[in-house]
Image (cartoon, rainbow, N blue to C red):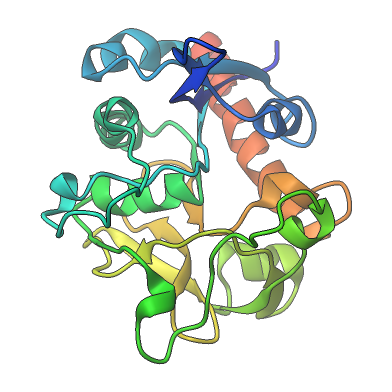
Amino acid sequence: MKPLIGISCCVKAFGIFATPNHAASDSYVRVTLGPVGGIPVLLPAAGEALVPEILPRLDGLILTGSRSNVCPDFYEGPPHAEGTPEDIARDSTTLPLIRAAIAAGLPVLAICRGFQELNVALGGSLDQRIQDLPGRIDHSTPSDQKYGRIRTAKAHNVRLTPGSLLAEVCGGTEIPVNSLHNQGIDRLAPRLVAEGWAPDGTVEAVRVRDAIGFAYGVQWHPEYDWETDAVSYGLLEKFGMAAEAWAARRRWPQAAE
């Protein structure tokens, strides 16, 4: 049986009545069915009460990207600029879910917003608009969204720690990545270890220092180009292997030992 992979959802307004829907991009479903090799399970932004009910049923967790930003109340930051999208329902679900998943040893892969959530959940803080900071480059989403190649193209390189997971995957210490974010890590959470940096010093890849299992985060979007990019494929495949191993231990604990 393939591992069950939880995919975090956002609350988004749909239709002429702006009805709230729980949604995740199709790219996360396709990547779960593809290189991850699992069965996608969409997790509604239903609050902390969902966590103990769903966590024992999962074999892995993908924390997705989103246009919304983590509410600054969760890291004691200043209020967002007017018009900045937030999703309190998602934050109230994913932040406790992250802590519980890591404590249990469940494999976790955090992407873009999910990467920022990982940092906040473990006690870190965020820069809200990197492009406004002195000496930093503009990491934000290109304005012309109708051109997919522009939106997902490689925007800058990331310098990797030698011997890190991604350095092992790529066989080197530098990779090109896409870039579609305004926010990023300010204060690194005590339990996180930075393993990748943009040219301006922005943290782009982290691992959880004392995690029982796979617990990794990237600021870019490997789910966009895994069909053409070997590093994206390799990272997702590593996560899938961890989830498969977790599923084997969960279903056949004696055989796995």
